[in-house]
Amino acid sequence: MGIGWNYAGFVLLVVFLLDAGDFCDGGVTSSFVRTKNISADMPLDSDVFQVPPGYNAPQQGIMRGMPCLCLGPLQMSQVQSTVLYWAENSKTKSHAKGIVLTYKYFNYTSGYIHHCTIKNLTFDTKYYYEVGIGNSTRQFWFVTPPRAGPDVPYTFGLIGDLGQTYDSNRTLTHYELSPIKGQTVLYVGDLSYADDYPFHDNVRWDTWGRFTERSAAYQPWIWTAGNHEIDFAPDLLGACGLSSINKLYYGSDLNSHGESKPFKPYTNRYHVPFIASASTSPLWYSIKRASAYIIVMSSYSAYDKYTPQYKWLANELPKVNRTETPWLIVLIHCPIYNSYIHHYMEGETMRVMYEAWFVEYKVDVVFAVMFMPTNDRMTEPQPSYSAYREASFGHGILDIKNRTHAYFGWNRNQDAYAVEADSVWLQNRYWTSSEESSIASS
Image (cartoon, rainbow, N blue to C red; front, side):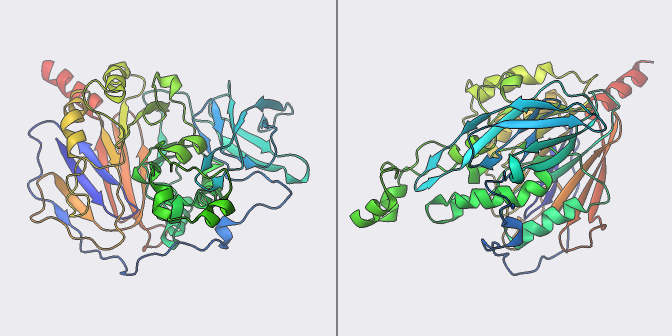
């Protein structure tokens, strides 16, 4: 059974897993009301979208995974794909070679997208890395996570449904200036919202990559696919009503059959270490980070019985070693509990399929997300599974202290940077129940 902390907007719906019988007698609905205007997308000439200086300078850098570092998409016009990297205070510099790819979507052709994996890095170490050549070289840095262990503290930022509006910029700025610094972002889906533009304008994938680079090039972002990453548009050409003259203008590269491959821009741009977790798809995978084991699932891929995602999760959950990584976290895009009118019950089938597994394997917390452009109506009366709900834009911080306790805080965009709108202490379900059993048997 889940008890939900619901924050609707660019928001996280947080489900804390409880044992059967642990119900909420009556939740709280916050009196907070967001500003009523719908946040517009930032224009293409916004400073946060600017192309970096230098001829063919790399752009849209992101990180994911570690101690094997994966870099990308790092769009450049050059075909050569090499990363120079070194540990802080080290005189030895090393090179790593990556792969380069491009993709086409309707009338858009991407730049060269570079993905590079750096292996055998040292835990808990600051590294610098350079990409590009000549006067277009750019330098970034990152810190590898500590070695996995049951009492290793670690802090995650929680962001989802970011898009590229003025409110998106506020969310990212709040996260960057948070007094509790996240070391890795858990991103719970819906990235660029490029599919909201005519012809799924992939230029908006480029602007989003440049916008998020200020954080994503310096710390890992662990990605979850949302509905805005599907980009399935087989009727795109017919819906455009293009004349023969327009077809000639777009050229022979125009796909006359629309776009029938789901997640095409997302999977080309954002590679994840799914093979390392024996997954058959980049849409579901797992990562160990310090004292946490993170399972990423796909709300918009088949997940019924005997599907590849189902089989993978059935094998993955028993493998989690809670004596090494006591905190078991699940990321999905569509909330399995939701007390808002918008998207109500959308995640019910996934809940029916997997909630029993989450309880059996003592998952500590499920993070999901949804976007509310306006102050949406909530279901009444407030359901027993809903402990707290509030329609605010913002970001979350999950601060793991040790094997038994973690702290979750919610930060609203409309508050000052240091103001925490809500918070809760979490007790680890595996270790708390183990200690209770030990006390009961003594």
